[in-house]
Image 1 (spheres, one colour):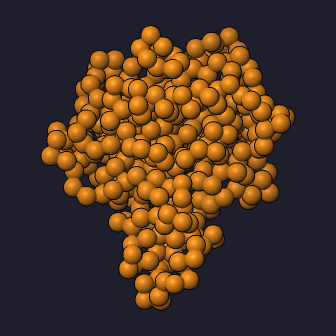
Image 2: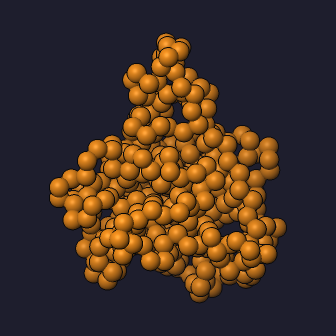
Image 3: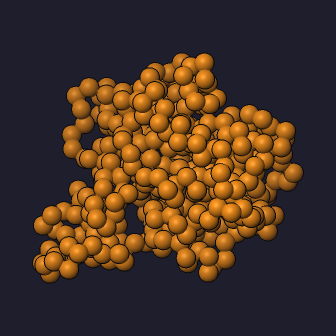
Length: 375
């Protein structure tokens, strides 16, 4: 629910953190004793570099909520704690990120079964973040929510996103070819921006055929690492279930950058109205244009994607299918040409502008896009 407008006077810096102008981050490990529904780790923007004690950056506008779903790793009951670098980078970019422990997935229960217990967990986590967490007031309301996940977690996140008000979904090596349960396959049901990433032949069950890819709604993004393995996202992390490592040493940080750009484009923070137009369709991070104050916070930020260049094992195939949109200059609304509402036919020629992305300062049409972040 990006609103644009002037930054509040209560903000101690001159910008709201976003995917192209970061700050530092803080994190807390919480559980039922702290009022959280399950053991989880929550990440948030901060101006303090002491992660575990850093205070949240408040007063600079509200942030979207992103929930990250971990996968199944045999021998690692607290696998949710392995996911740190990606949620930290998203927090630096103006998001509150929750990584909960998913008991069903931790026990190996496939997300394709009809009554998966972790769906209730995700609902409880989303509700707690916006009403029970001590800093709930910094969060934008639904549908300013993003879902992301890896492996089984990617599959579960897609199920959750297909039936809830969610603004964007990113799936890393979901086991789509291993969907055997009674629940309907969620990817064709997603009516929201989607990013899918998978590896090569060793990344089993994760690849979609071109026919399956073409069934997905617009806008959709796909990144394929020909030499990538299933656990390469967790670079430098001791994962007991890792049985092979791909030859590209930069895959994990590069995917962090792609996911950050994806949510920056489709789910910007409250005062990030101009951000989506600055993120290219390829999701490759553009050069940062920072003030000296902003440069202080930007060390080590968005350097994963550029590191792929020139490494023979890091080839990535990137493709995207953008939306078919029309902007109404008079009402400053953006409509769908694929599923137009009745008002599209009423737009006069001088006010009609066919576009590939929502222009800065425009809003989504509530009828064409009832689940978009400002719908």
